[in-house]
Image (cartoon, rainbow, N blue to C red; front, side, top):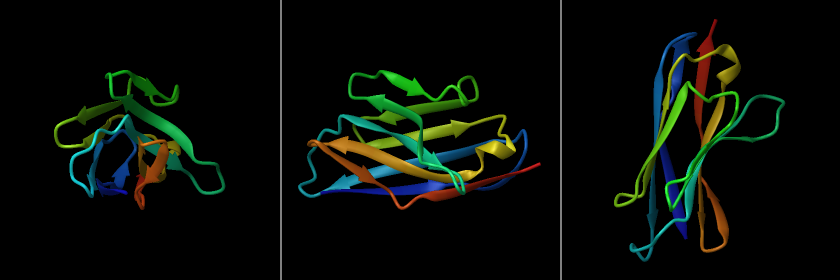
Length: 117
C-alpha cells in the first residue's frame, strides 16, 4: 500500500504562481515508485494528466501547461513537486498526486487550485 499526501494549492490571481507537493509513504517503508506525477480534474470534466516523471527521469507534460509548469521529483524522499507559473483561470481544478507502483495506481485525496481572473 502507498499513501499519497498533497500540500499546497489555494487561491491565486491569474498570472500568479503556486507550488504543489506530494509525499508518498508505504509499509514496508522501502520501495521504488515507477512513476509519480499530477493529474487534475476541473468541474464537469474528466481527470487529465498534468505532468509525470518516470523512475528514469523522463518527464511528460500536458500541452496546455508546457512552459508554465515544472515537475520535479526527489527519489530518495519519494516526493514530487509541481511548480506552477503564469496560472490561468482554466487551470482551476482539483489536483491529484498520482503514483504507479507494483502494477497499481495510487491517488492522493486532491488539493484545490483556484485561479481568479
